[in-house]
Length: 384
Image (cartoon, rainbow, N blue to C red):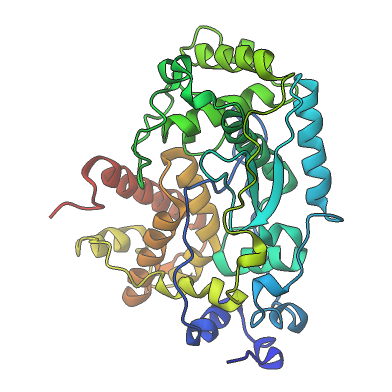
């Protein structure tokens, strides 16, 4: 079944998602939550708010029925090429001769034990990046964020290239590489046993991520990690990275396997199929309490004003980004939670009083954070 670009040109992003529901495809899988990142070691969150949106034009929408593998996407000649070259210069400046191979894939990641870096295919084309932002509600990565991804993934690749994860000192420092990789993890906010690079206390997810995050902090140019982590237990991890980089940096990699996991050439789904999982948002039963309706009425008490549903949709991306940054909850699950609240707000017909937008936003974010932390410690947004 095809998509008529002339009809789609008249649709907003919500209509567009509904138009794609005729495509049946499995939900896009996520190997982990490597999603959004900041540029410095312990920075203030950056968020790119979209105040005004223009409809996706017919040229962009005409891409939806095309298979991803047929889009002839390449790294060469795109900004990614320069960003990868910068990563290689950073490695060289640290005395590391290893250059991890980079390729376009379904998402960010390194196949376990293989020293290569997968980069999301949509970053190779500005039109695809725009579709990603419009349909997911979260903007595609900026160049600053891409650099952070690359440093993190190069940490995985460096560990795999020299089999560092088999080193007993690696295990004593970071934990067992064989520890099961969790679908969910319960971070300990502000723990000084871990470095901070990716939002959401990501180093705490697994020893493999702990090493990759530590490597990324160590690699970041102009970041004085010696001063930043002085006296903190995380310093031992940074010193380990510094030591093994000096030991192995001038040596050729021990592992040269270049198996590529889900390369773009094998992504046979159409773009419409790729994003068809969005129809599930807001439809899942998350076990939210009925009394939540009373809480929402408290946050939105006015009978007059703008639609609270529209208000929530306008700030959806920002709320998800900020709550993920501070709580570490997986972005997909967090998006489902926000969308469930939006559905509840819609059913209640709530409104935002004029001039109360900032106060209301603070209240909603506090509510979201409370629900998320409840989930972290009880495995449910609300116990029954």
